Structure formats: structure tokens, C-alpha cells
Length: 114
Length: 111
Image 1 (cartoon, chains in turn green, orange):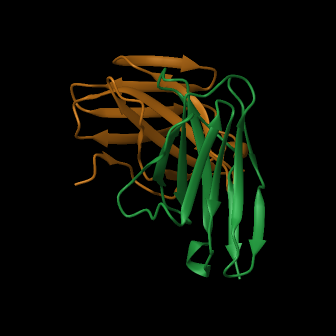
Image 2 (image 1 turned 90 degrees about the vertical axis):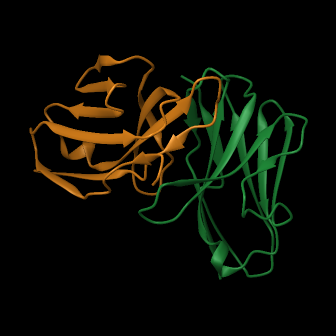
């Protein structure tokens, strides 16, 4: 099956700094990447959908200037949390699909903003 | 009403029990159904994927879809403590590629 590599798995940063999370497709070239946020004991909340070479589509209520998504190549998508604040602390997960409907997830990144 | 309903649990069972996890949905356009397992602080792992009504078996796991009742199930036979995790159901409309997730059921298998 497809393999998605996400890193870092855990990051602690100071309030006001920016953090970049990377997701890399190892087995195939993902057409679409999804970025999710997950709070403890809650389901996945879709933040945005990105396609290679085009601007990401953000879900309602997600600040696109705060959560910058870049999908410059078929194998790499990045999420940058800009000017992070403690309320941005969460578990962020990427997911890729080839368009055949199955979605494969990265390992997740636990972000703690202090 | 959410499109996908899933009891968050926790569901606690003894080792060796048969586990039944369920989701109901309201959107008749859903055609693809998936079950994911998520361990604490890890990304979800795809367990089962199906697109038709009926049963699909893979080892100790059986996925069941009843489109007429808008109800899907995941059965785990001979449950093990290592099966303790959160199980998420997910569904996709035909022609779409964006899944809708249930909130997940926390399963605890105790020795």
C-alpha cells in the first residue's frame, strides 16, 4: 500500500513562531493531499485540500493566512502554521489519495505551542 | 444531524471476544466505505475498504455494509489487547474523493 511520511512527529515551539510540517508520498505521486486537525478524543477535522501546482482549498472557518499549504510537487505537501499560538496546539495529520477513493495517512504531528 | 454517526465509546471487552463497531449515515450518496484504526498519537491506518453492500473479510476483520439501512459495521474476531485503539469509519460520495469521518469509537481489549 501507499506510504506517506510525515514529519516532524512532535514539535514544541514558542508562541509567535512558525512551524512547518511536511508530508511526503513515498510510493506514488499523490494527486490530492488533505490536511486534518484532530483534538483529543475527537474526529478528524478537514482543514484544507491541496493539489499539486494549485492553490489549496480551505474549509470554512480555517484561516488560510495562518495555515499556509504548499503542494509544489506531486510527492510533497507542506503545512506551515504561522505565528503560532497556544490554541493552535493540536494533532495535525496529512492524508493522500490517488483519486481511487482510498486515503492513506501520515503518522501525524503533535504541535505544542508554549 | 451529522452525516455520519458513530458512538465514541469507550467499548471495553475481554480478550478473545467478538467486537462489533458500527456507524450509521444519512447521506444516500455515500458509495465507498472505509474503516481506520488509530493508535494514540498516531495517524489513522486503513483497515478495510469496500464499496458494495455485503461482507468483506480480511483475517480477523469483517466489514459489513447495508446500504438499504445506511449502516456499516466492523467485526473483530478473537480480539487482542493490541486491538485497543480508536476505530474510525469513513465514507465517500460517488464521484468525490473527500471522505467524511465518524468521530471514532475507542476500543479497549483487556487481558
